[in-house]
Image (cartoon, rainbow over the protein chains, first blue to last red):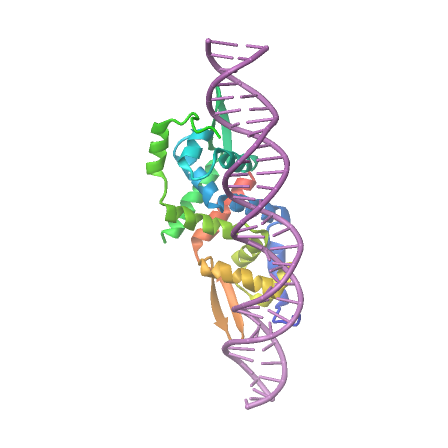
Amino acid sequence: MNDKCCTNQKNVNLVLTGLPSEDDIVDISEIFKLLGDPSRMRIVSALRIKELCVGDLAAIMEISQSGVSHQLRLLKKNRIVKTRRDGKLIYYSIDDSHINSIIDVALSHIHE
Amino acid sequence: MNDKCCTNQKNVNLVLTGLPSEDDIVDISEIFKLLGDPSRMRIVSALRIKELCVGDLAAIMEISQSGVSHQLRLLKKNRIVKTRRDGKLIYYSIDDSHINSIIDVALSHIHE
DNA sequence: TCTTCATATGAACACATGCTCATATGTTCA
DNA sequence: TGAACATATGAGCATGTGTTCATATGAAGA
């Protein structure tokens, strides 16, 4: 509850003017939030290996077909995955190579 | 509720053997989850510009000092930020250059 | 030591999120 | 067209999560 804390106004201003826009902050954290769930990460990791239809993904995962579909919807809305129809099947795959890069770097991060 | 869906067992097995370990999946999604909140992303974005003490961060953000401290705790526990004490002040900064790389790639992703 | 200041912690609450069940949509093939 | 199958959607529920308030901790200086 102390408002008179150390605040160095120069630093604060410097940072405030250098920060990404609020829109960018929101957009970028949205991407990370999507990757920040084990189920979705498992989906994305699977699609990094091979394009897959929903049924195959459900077989790979530990959640229901419905659950997979709900998550794929989110991932697709944010352009993390894209779809291709082949008859009755809908194949999902990674939409953008940036996503692969991000995950590659994160993998090397956790492996220190 | 259809268990007899398209499942192509060859693809499923191929992907299952290629997936990262469950531990890796959990660890990596943990990192992304931390970056996947606008407040924490704002904190991390600020620290990318300059090391800052808690009070300065609270002045930059739209949440209380307590809120900032809680989030910093999470970020520190997962080695996204590190601390340095200087008298009464505790300066926070980005712990690992991988974090900067991940955010750089994500920024170029959202800017297409 | 006592006060002051910066930071950390715990409890509590409102809200978001991921899952399943049931069902709808939409495509293929007879 | 109608049956069969793959996928999508909506409701509902249990669990997580981000925030604030109040307070504790701990370092610096009188």
